[in-house]
Amino acid sequence: MPVKLALSVEELQTRFYELSRTLHPDRFTRRSERERQYSLDASSVLNDAYRTLRDPVKRAEYVLKQNGFDIGEQRSNNVPPELLEEVFELNMALEEMRGGDESARPQLEAAQQNFLRMRENIDQQLAALFGQWDESGDRGKLAQIRGLLNRRKYVLNLVRQTEETLAPAMQG
Image 1: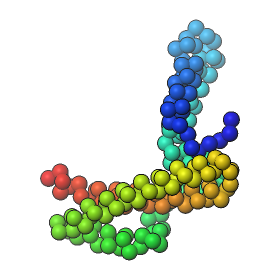
Image 2 (image 1 turned 45 degrees about the vertical axis):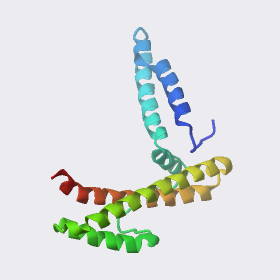
Image 3 (image 1 turned 120 degrees about the horizontal axis):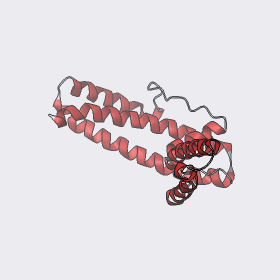
Image 4 (image 1 turned 30 degrees about the horizontal axis):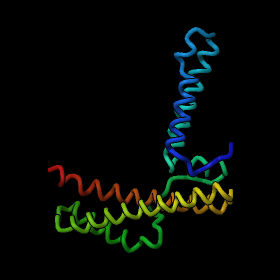
């Protein structure tokens, strides 16, 4: 079966449930210890695989790793060049909010929405690249996917920072 990045979640789930029923330890209670252990081990591997495959980011990271791409942690100091100005302004607004200046709240909320839109855009680009890689098997597409995943991690970190800074005042 060829490796694919663009998957139907419904088909994946159907196949997972089929295999789960086949491998479930309850079906092996009257079998030998070896067969019961096989069932437990196979069920564990199946569950891990399903968790990886149902998440497009984890699925892409797995395929990248299998193809020799380093998927190390995105460092916060690796700012994508096109985000430099926005990140500078965001950091200033974050400092103001953390210092108790509520006037920065609208700017932070707008930045958060902008970063969420960026993530959505990245996810759309990833989906398109998944299909292109499935068709071509071109390693260049995997390199593009890796670059987008790094950008996505960076953007998610920005979303998290804005959420954490905005949350305390929202809870109060």
